[in-house]
Image (cartoon, rainbow, N blue to C red; front, side):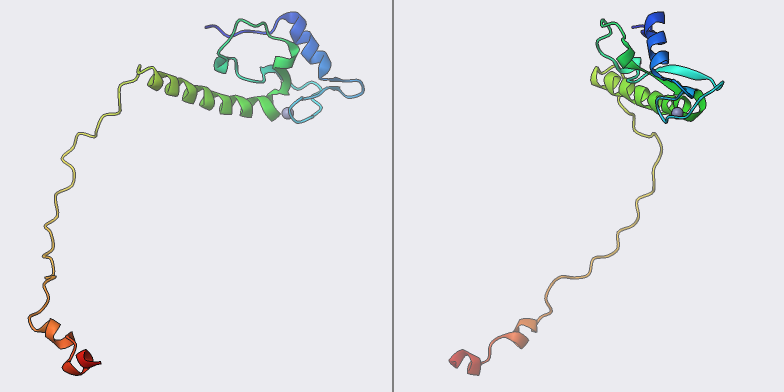
Length: 137
Ligand SMILES: [Zn+2]
């Protein structure tokens, strides 16, 4: 499904919303006064993550962000989240091949150390057996 873009009317509405009467256009992410700096109108929730794209975009779906201060870092994060969502969906729909085991000889089996005997030494029980005096009490 293709990405929904803001119509010119909605785009203008967002820019007007970000327009400060005294300072001009401000970033809606951090409040920076942009002046002549470039800005983008960003999808607040990335369009690639929207399941239902039948609804038309409104001004509430977008934010005016300064390119350097807010939009670049947000885009980097969004791209990671979108890629992860795609991987999870592909895995869920079993479109991805399951992870294969590494084909190598592996590590050699180490010779097992000889186990220490757990048998009780002969005569050991007799040392701790109750004496006749103890039995009498
Ligand atoms: Zn900003």
